[in-house]
Image (cartoon, rainbow, N blue to C red; front, side, top):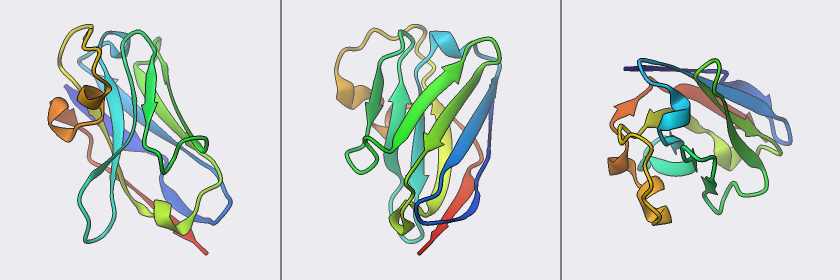
Length: 129
C-alpha cells in the first residue's frame, strides 16, 4: 500500500490550496482515510477524515474552511483548503486505516493518529501573512 501526497506550496493568507493523496493497493471507498499535519516543533495533529460511507470529521481549527473528499474511481483523496491562515503552515500527511469498511461509530477513532496504518510522505504548506 502506498500513499502519495501532493499539492502543497507557498501561498498568501486568504488563499486556497487543494491537496491530493493518490492511494495504490487499496480501494479508498472501502477504507477510512485522513489528513494530519505537523508544524515545526509541534506534534502531528488531526485535520480531517472520511469514512468508507462518506461521513466526514474535521478539527475545530479547520471546520468551515477545509473540505475532505475523494474520487473513488481514481482512488484519490482530496483536501480543499480555503481561507488559509499562517497557522495552517505545516507538513500535511494523508493516511489510511487498514480496517476494511470500518463501522466504528466513535468519532475519536477516526481522529486518532494510531488508527491509521499507512502514511504518505507529506507535502509542505506554507501560508504567508
